[in-house]
Length: 189
Image (cartoon, rainbow, N blue to C red; front, top):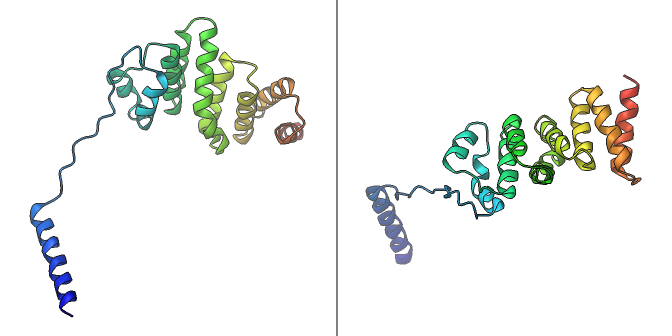
């Protein structure tokens, strides 16, 4: 019984001490990087991804610029795209030359693809359409852009994207069957 009293008194003493002392101050965690041009875009993105949203993306790019490389540009475009700022993402890619554009679009696809796979058509559709603007035969982006347009009731663009998907993708699998099913339903509209 004495042991229980001792445990109880210890618990009360620790609780009183915690109340008197107050909360432990926590230093601000900073995700700000220097924007070193040699830094890899993926590393930059891993630090700033939580800020790739509508409210913070502009300030993020101003205060924490991405590396000045194709990788930096691709991840910067992906960040803008995640925030729904497709025009800004497009501008980043357009600033690149030649083959660098479709490669940056590939980075955007890699970041946006999980959104498409989760079925968030409103968010994924514009991201996938941005990808096919710079990489027109990217069959996965074509499929997801078509599926997003279909889900949103925009059957004209859905048909265009899905027919292009079938032109570039020759596997007889679930993706092909799904695209054909959507096209059949579009034809009955």
